[in-house]
Structure formats: structure tokens, C-alpha cells
Length: 119
Length: 236
Image (tube, rainbow over all chains, first blue to last red; front, side, top):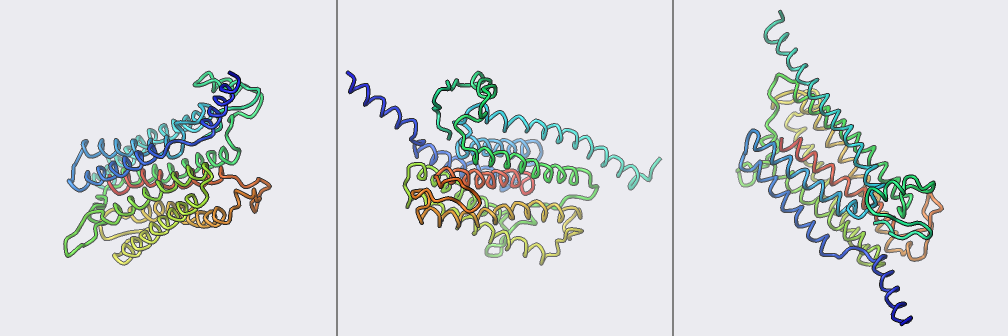
């Protein structure tokens, strides 16, 4: 009994130190190629308007997520590290929101003074 | 990947684990090599730098009353007399993803102590990075010949040039630094520095294959940034 337990213990330890299977990397690699091809096709077929922007963003976030989760191993990291890395992104989202309001205002003033000529 | 076992400490999964890791009066990132944690912190700060560039680009492009240059025409290449939109950019993207994949495999083989395979894959990654930088040089010189300058260009809004050179230049700089380090680490792996536990240049840290993962994190980040530049600058 003890011997079999020992064998089980050593196999468990080996499992813990071994890396991910090669298949998962190859799949992610292939997916990244396919997604890049699709995002290139968005330009190739000259999609316009909301369809273009939503497709670009969709493929972009999917690619970024795959790279971070599997190539950069965040999927297997502990939450202490993952949360420290991902929560600061909300600050960037806030900044984007603020600057959107800002560029709309700048555009409005430029039209108002350059084109219309002021009040 | 972190080692998932620490003596005398129970590693709980999920958010409970996060709370107990953070409040453990010990190192916070359990089983994460300090070099890896520091690389992540550096990449986080780099994310903010690139975000500022891209957000300022959004602000500049959104607030100009002159039309923005049509990127799929500006970045098209003529193949047999026919313009192919974004051809060079597409090839650059594929080259960078290829090198990202070889890097991921290099990290895996490194942890499996497969020295030769790891070394060849890092070398392949370095060559891919070098190809990318080479094509970027070609792209820059082509646009400069066509009269694109940081203060103006013949295609449309004059802000185009400054954002283009700033954003792709800063990314290209990251790739170049990465390529230099990839070649250095190719040498270190083939020379067996991680088997003999040879110490590095600036550190007392004994050589270990975790360094390959740290290098890999940087390289994947360079690829990650390109994903965003490709979407926002070239496709948008």
C-alpha cells in the first residue's frame, strides 16, 4: 500500500511541475492567425460604419485576450496577480471616456470659430 | 506559470485565495518569481504609456476638421500594378504573431529543460522580430519619400504624420530592444547558463529557465500592443 501511495505522490508532483500541453499553444497560435486574417478581411471588403468598428473591436479584444490568457499564462496565474494587473485598466477606460468628451468639444469649437466664424 | 505549492501555506483558489494571499503578511504573489512580478509591473506601466499615445491619437483624430488620410490607400502596396490595401501591415502582423507563437513554445520547452529546442525557438523569435523591424524601416522610408512629415502630409489632416511616427516608432523601439535581448538569451540558452546556474550580469540571481518566461512576457506584450495599433491606427 505504502509503495503505491509513494508512486502516486511522485506522479502528482511531476504533474505539478510539468508545463501545459503543446496542443493548447498550437491552437491559440492558429486562432490568432485566423482572427488576424478576419480583421484584415474587414478592410479588404471595405465594411463601413458600425459594422466595421464593432468587428475591428471584437477581433482586437479576442486576440488580446487570447494572448494575455494563454501566451502570457494569466489564465493559470493566481487571482492576486491577475487582479492587480487588470483593475488598473478601468483607469484607462475612464481616460478614454473623458477624452471622448474633450475631442467632441474641441471639434465643436473649431467648427464654430473656423467655419461659422463665431457668434 | 507559478508553482502551485508552498510549504506551510494553504493556497486557496479564486477570490478567497486572493484575499488570503494579500493578507498573509508574506509575499503577496505566491509562487511567482520576483523577476516575473517586476516584469508584469513594468508591462503595466508600459500599458499606460501606450494608452496615452493611443488616446492622444483618438483625441487628435477626433477633433480635426480636415479629413483623416485613408489608411488603406496610404499603406497600400502595388503588386503587379494593382494596389493591395494594407499588404505590408498584414504581413508584419503575421510575422509578429508567428514570432509570438515560437516564443510561447520556447517558454514551454525551457521549463521542460529541453535546451536545444528552447534555443532554436528563441532564435526563430529573434529572426521574426528582426524581419518585423526591417519591414517597418521599409514602411517608414516609403512614407517619408511620399512626403509624410510630423507636421504635414499630402493625404489629409496634418496630425497624421506625428501620430504615425510617434506610435509606430515607440512600438518599433520596443521590438528592437526585444530583438537584442532575444539574441542575448539565445546565446545564454545554447551556452547552457541555465543548466550550470550561471549568474546574470546585473544580478546575483542564479540562472533559471524562469528568465525565458520573463523574456516571453515582454515579447508577447510587444505583440499585444501591435494588436491595438493594428486595430486603431491601420484599420479604423
